[in-house]
Length: 289
Ligand code: AMP
Image (cartoon, rainbow, N blue to C red):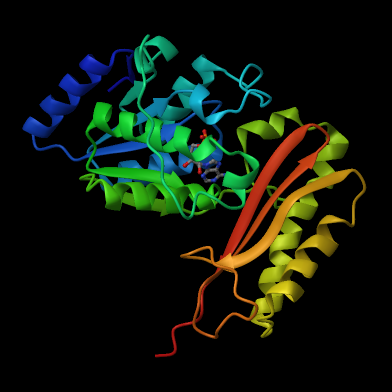
C-alpha cells in the first residue's frame, strides 16, 4: 500500500476510527521530519508491533524559543515520504501550523518536576510545547502504541509522565539511539555541521562512553563522573557545554554517590559552532540472578 498523506486532523481521526473498527493495531511515530535512519528505526519498530503505522511530521513551533532554529529547521518533504514508506509507514500525518494551532488556541500542557532541569532549564518552554503537541498528535491519530527515541532521553521521561498522569490509552515504547559509524548520534540538526565540526562532535558520544566505562569499573561518585564527561568534551576547542551531568535514570535526581542498584543516565547538551547537539547513555545495574 502506498503511503497516504493526511493533512487534516478530522480526516486523521476518521481514518483511525475506521482502523480501530477493523481491529487494526495503530502505531504512531511522532517526528519533526528531515528523517534519517534513527527515525526509520522507530518506524520499523512500530511496524513490527502494529498493523497500521502513522508517522507524524510537524515542526512544532511551540517547542522552539524565539531565538532558536525554527525558521531554518531542515525540511525535505519528498525524501521524508520515501524514508517513511520504505521503513513501513502507511500514513504520513503532516498538518499545517494553522491546522494544529488555529486562531484562538489557548491550551498548554505543563508538567512539573522532571521538566525543570537540564533541557528544561536551558529551553524553558520546550517541554510544555512537547507535551501539548504530543497530546494533540495522540488525539489525532488514536494509536495503541507510540514509539519514541532514547536520543531525547528527558523527553521520554516527560512523555511517560504525561501518559501516566492523563491516563492516555497508549503504550509507549522507547528505542535505542542510532548513530553514525564513528559514534555521532543521528540528528536532523547534524546537517548544520561543517566537516570540521562533524569530526569535533565525536567528543560527545566519546564523553558518554567514557563515563559509562567508568561506572562499569565501579565509579559511583557523581562529581567524578561529571568531570569525566567534561574533560572529554573539553578536549576540543570551541565547544560550549550547556550541561554534562550524571543523574538517576528514572527520577533525574543527582545524589553525591549513586547506589550499586540504581540506573544512571549521562546527559549532554553542547553547542559546536552554532549547532546545538544532545546525547545520552543509560547504565543499568546487571541482573544478579
Ligand atoms: P525529531 O524529529 O528530532 O523530533 O525526533 C522524532 C523522534 O525520533 C523522537 O522520538 C526522537 O527521539 C527520535 N530520534 C531522533 N534521533 C534519533 C536517533 N538518532 N536514533 C533513534 N531515534 C531518534
